[in-house]
Length: 371
Image: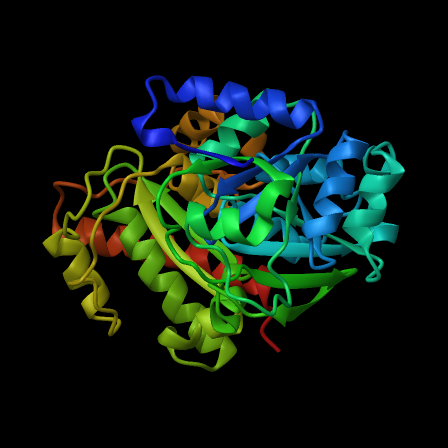
């Protein structure tokens, strides 16, 4: 008989997590809540478990990873757009499918029954990173990913509650971890990659338009307080790039570019300095609605190009995140610091703007040569 345990009311939620780990290791199935729906899960190392999962699966299954980084252990040549989606949408309601020819030896080390369940008749394997603590905690304690029921092409409503999961999966499930209704109750969006190209095969929580934006190139300009230099750099880069592409500033996202700024010591919601607003107003660039934001780990992870105003800004970021070395550099191509006009005169702000614009134009010329 299927046991349903409300994890929030358990004396110690860790006991529920450990119980789930034990059952999975013994070849049982466990149902977990995710952000989209409840899924039935088996250990990818258990042939008994995957055989049971096959009996209740509609033919589709996915490999549930504990983090975006784990995808690199299974996909030998992850395409550039897939890198971006993994950084920006995982954990979350996104499933990515990769051709079996793109997978590496770690996938081949899984039991043959697991491989057959995952590939099905599509010659591709689906991966997702569910955004729910219960399944993520279990994944951190298990030696290999979980195989979970996938929601692609399902003909019946997704199980949004523990009771729904118990009814849908029946006695094949030994345990359902109940954490109330799932947040969305809608399918994940599924994207399939063939080399660098990708196609939307099922639209779910993430729209096609949002996907296009998620695979854009993100430029992040960084200074100290995000009230002077980096907002001016953001505004100037957005305007000059739009001019080079012959589009409106607001159309840059649809052209594959996102432009942001932040400060290492910034507070949230601060305004650009009046002098910075006035300096860019002469260019027809409006900074009056700018709101400062601090540099965060998530912001750095999502950015493709992190351009700092000074060498110290660069060093501070790299001292904490050395793995970002390939994406962090000075705005100045000749490695000169951009002078800080904070507290200075309007003339100093104008000089700073001219200095930033010179570097911005070099950046744009390298990115999109002027024909």
